[in-house]
Amino acid sequence: MLNFPKPFSQPQPHPREFAVPESVSQAHHPHTSEILELFRLRGDSQYGSEPVSQREHALQAAWFAEQQGVDPNLVAAALLHDVGHLLHDLPDDAPEQGIDDHHENLAARWLQRRFPAEVCAPVQLHVAAKRYLCAVEPGYFHQLSPASVCSLRLQGGPMSELERVAFERLPGAAAAVRLRRWDDAAKITGLQTPPLEHFARQLDACLASGPPAGHDLGENT
Ligand SMILES: [Fe+2]
Image (cartoon, rainbow, N blue to C red):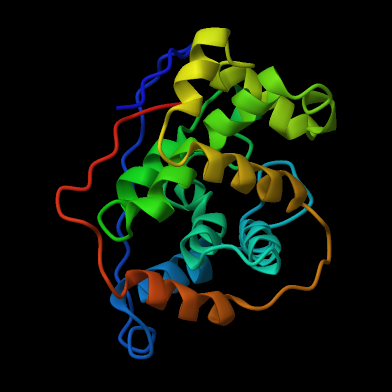
């Protein structure tokens, strides 16, 4: 169970569900088809105040992960780490309005019914990983984008020593830190990446064994 204190407690939105048109659902695992449909419907939305869309951000993060030869589950996590932003109706600039959308928990709740823990845990912890890196890595904070600094305030700021120790013990923490670095880098206007269809095949592979029985993630930062 992951429970770090937050400076602001706000009601957390519930993930939306999407009906997948028959034409989309033929070639892939049903959950992959859901994700393709989600990006078709909402992937053009802006990634906060960053100069890329949600689709571009996801593809760049997944592309960076794949180029490092990591496990396909971690490539999937990189692709899906911000899927929570696509599952609520809050404005793109919610952090600038002082709203924490808790997208990491929203994503984890949605993903845990579909993907193995190796995908879900780094996604859920990618916000905590930013707070962690701010606490342990000199200079990390100063390379964050203005939008990321803005959301960091809402997310609790750099971790305390107690939080740092607790974070390092969590399954998926190291993977979340790796993911965080791809997340931070995936904001490059016009960067060419493979298309979603490329990563859809990897999602199919991750989904082949299905989510483990009783898979349940606690809420966290
Ligand atoms: Fe992100």
